[in-house]
Length: 456
Image 1 (cartoon, one colour):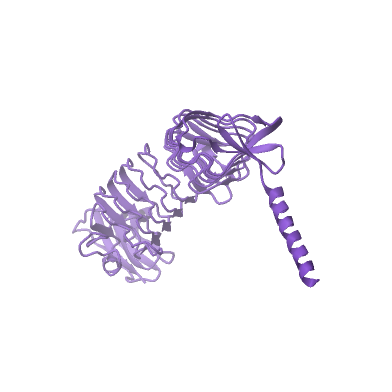
Image 2 (spheres, rainbow, N blue to C red):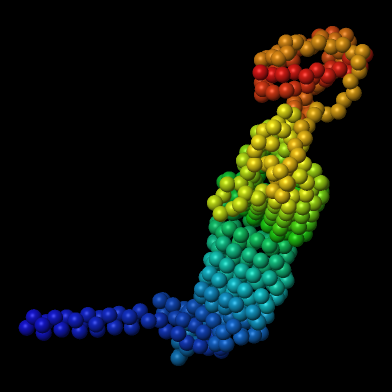
């Protein structure tokens, strides 16, 4: 009896499982060589691919609806990897019924040309949806209903140009969503609550953090921006120059990597504290001076690797910034850099020599450190001036006949104070300055004198 009851229950369980799976099964069908799957709502379908698979050719015109066995279905979704590696499709039309373009839907469809128009019905564009669709050679139009643009969504769509317009509803833009695109301009709808393009800067700025997340060849970085995001300018083929304002505190990983045509000098302003890994990787067009600001504390691996045409390098930081410590990297910040001589602040050569900035053969670093002197001025032997007390912890008194002007320089040769004088004495207070060596230039009716002062 117990065995009979057990068998009945077992059979019932099998039937429930069978019917359960049958109930969960989704209908699939093909219309006009396109494959569809009926969605759980029973009225719409997901486009899943083409009957010819990777060999599909020609224009892909997706219909708004299809009829199967007498029932009309609305096409609302383009499925995950539906057309992945369909190299031979040549054009794409997405209807105004589609609401979702899933991950990798058109990735590596490298034959698509013309404009790429995302209709107003679409709300979400998945990760890598159009990854490496590099033959699109027109404009990208993003519909007004889009809220989410996934990571790598348009990565390496290098042929897209014109102006990128980010609608008001877009609140999520994934990492590298537009990497290697060559837009001539960027605008963000003024009603967008998350992003902006302030001051007509031709960039996307995250409003809450003042981080520039995407730039283009015509970007002017506003002084209200405090960070340049990861890969923000990566691979911009037409970018020839960039001005980093003195408001930036961090430059993200890969921010300007593969910008081969940047030329001239590169100045990292004094406001910057961190430079991310690969920030200027393979920027081989720079052919002037690299100047690293005085506040830089950390430079990530590969940051200046293969910047092979710089002719001079200057660090204004008194303490050698830390060089690369990311797991999996090899601390090759300056490998194949253009010069192996680094100019450092006065009195700091030994600190750099004893750090990992030093490389005795210059393959990944510098083997010669030159200390900067104050700006060149002529000394006149017959000018007699006195500056005391020296060393000092505060004010010094300056005495000379007929003083006309006093200038105070730090050890980097930068003027930190200048004032016209009419008399034989002047007092300057160092209490608000850091300890170190300073230079006072005394201009008098008889000529110019320079005095070195040590501040304790």
